[in-house]
Amino acid sequence: MSNQVSSTLLTALDGQLAAIVLLVVFALLLIFIGIKIVPDGNSRIVERFGRRHRVLLPGVNIIVPFLDKIKKSGFDQLSVRVEGGDKPSEKLWTRDGNISLAEQRMDPKKLKLLAKDNSEIYVDSVVYFRIVEPMRAVYDVAAFEASFVSLVETTLRQEVGRQDGDSIVTARDIMGESLRSALQEAGTNWGIQIIRVEIEDVHFNPEVAEKLSEAREKELIRRAELIEKQAEAEQQVLLAEANKKSIILEAEGVKQAQIMKAEGEKQAQILKAEGEFEQDRLQAEGRYLAESREKEGEAKGFAAIVEALSNDPNAIIALQALRAQENVADSLGKSNNALIIPSETAGLFGAAASILKGYEQLKNST
Image (cartoon, rainbow, N blue to C red; front, side, top):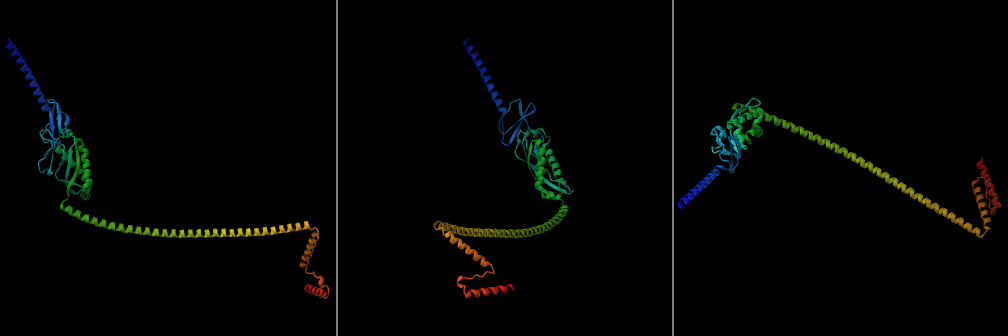
């Protein structure tokens, strides 16, 4: 009985252990299937139930087993033409699902194009790009290589048709940048980034190249002659400008000299007027001082007379006598008929003098 129980327990334990082992193995299998390691510089596209789901970036990624799967490359998808199409196209999408994110080179064949002046030009271009949105590059464009080459050729025809042959040869960089911008507008919907476009070679047919060379030589000669004429004209303009400036400077010098002369004369007149004013002022002050002193002397004289009169009242009679004598002398001096005979000459000499005086007066009257 005990043996049967123990055997039953062992059987049950073995069944549980087997189930656990199976679960562990299944879990490890799910983990192994769900873990995806993407190499550096690549990406992978995950589909869920047949539809685009997400993009796996470089490194360790986890997907849901049996629901998600890695999309594998199809026939003639995501390839680029290299070396002008002489070599097989290079695949950008491997069979294990890795899509390259590195910079790629698209090298279409050399094209024979028509320029604006209807000249035939052979143009060889190279386009450098990289995939930035793998889902668009895989799902949104069919036959990536053929579509890309057709886009490059169409855009290049349009850019060459806008210019003449001469400008295309001398403006490769400008045409390459214009071509890059035009390609980027169309390539955005394809999930690619146009990095740069280079024009490797541009040439004409030998006959056309010879004619263009001759025309170019004539054009260079014409431009040289035009530049020489422009230089002569500029030299004449500079000479005229120099003469004009010289005349202006001379006129300004004359004007400045006249202004300085006028200012000098004005200053001299001001100084002269100030000198005359100062002289008149000093003369007036001198006259004023002389008159003041004269008045002062008269005042002192009057004061002395007043003092003398106050001390001796009889002096008034002597003063009046002196004034009377002064008036008589003044009258006699002004009269032509007066004859003064001093008392000391009242004798013979006085009489003779009087007779001579009368004779002189009678002679002068006749």
